[in-house]
Every structure is written in C-alpha cells, then in structure tokens.
Image 1 (cartoon, rainbow, N blue to C red):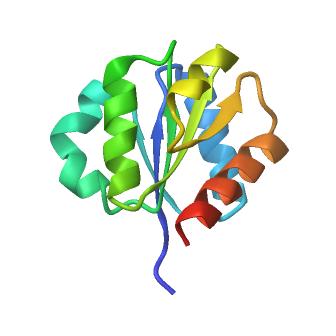
Image 2: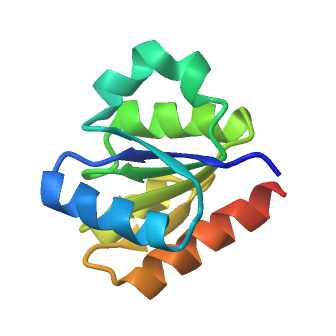
Length: 118
C-alpha cells in the first residue's frame, strides 16, 4: 500500500512540529510542511497529489479558502485549523478544527476528512 502524503501548512514552527509529531506517531503518512499558502501556490500540482492537507486558516483568509477549495476539488482531504472558530464556516469543503486542540482531536479531524474522500 502506498504511503499517504500529508501537507501541513502552519506558520508557527512549534505548532507545526507538534502536528507533525502527532501525524507521524499515528503513521498517517509522509509529511510536507510549508509555512503558508503563498509557499504552496507555486507547488499546487505536486501538492494536489497529497491525501490530506492540514491547513491553518487565519480569519477565513480568501487565499486560503480558494487554495483549500482547489485541493478539495482535486480529491485531497482537507482539515482547516483556526483559533477563530467562526472562520471555519468559510470552509464547507473541509473539516474544521478549533485551536487549541489535542492529539485525539487532530486525529479525529484527519480521519473525518479522509473518510469524506474515500
């Protein structure tokens, strides 16, 4: 069985490392970490081959909404994380995850997103 590719977009380095640790420990797949959507846009074709994207969404930023919609249309499962719980409403194509979260919450959101596309 091929290894899943997991995209993590998170600006805060310590939080990104925590997410990576949780995902790696759960053996969900190989990680690609980028700091923001600006870094991801030029690599869209490559990233559209990922199984799952875990993306930080500050205040429902339009560029993040558009990027995650494109990923979802390409068949990528999407989890959107935000400390602004209302902003996750801008992402009906994704599973919302409020910050702060724990490992169980992150993994539940990842599994829910993956089940949407399988």
